[in-house]
Image 1 (tube, one colour):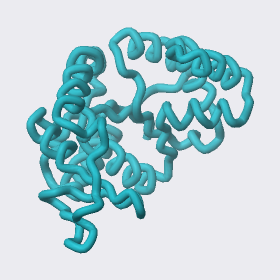
Image 2: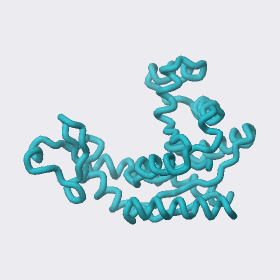
Image 3: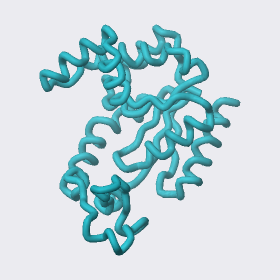
Image 4: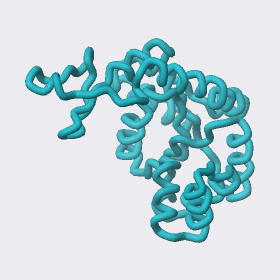
Length: 213
């Protein structure tokens, strides 16, 4: 099963990616983790990416795509993969599509975990972390125990202003990839407001149906 996972920040991609990776026996490939691993391993592409990052620059799309293709060619991706965090823009989607075709790595699906903006805002702004243990809580869904309530903190990028900016960026930059994959018949939309178990069941049901079809 070769898939790309898409969704706004806070949509639940990380939670579902872990479950899907275990279910299908395939690796979850976050482009951020992939970049860091390539740099740490000192690969040729990793060295090039490191030079950009040290200079405080974004790693160019063509270099990221070359690293993605290199990663997808590794043995653990033989049965498939979950690509998370890339592509983030329509030009990246088009360039990745060309590179995958050249590498003869066809995609099976692009899964969108769809969550309304206000629900995203509620999910993220309600998060609190315990600086001593690193445990994440939510003021409504999973409140911290009373004895540690005074020490939990809100991360700077979890404020309403920061979250609205991230959501706006998602709509402006990433949402345009959806029609691209929809035109190719690859897009699967799943309601991300449901319980995580229901979201997982909806994704696997749609993926298995698409594979049989």
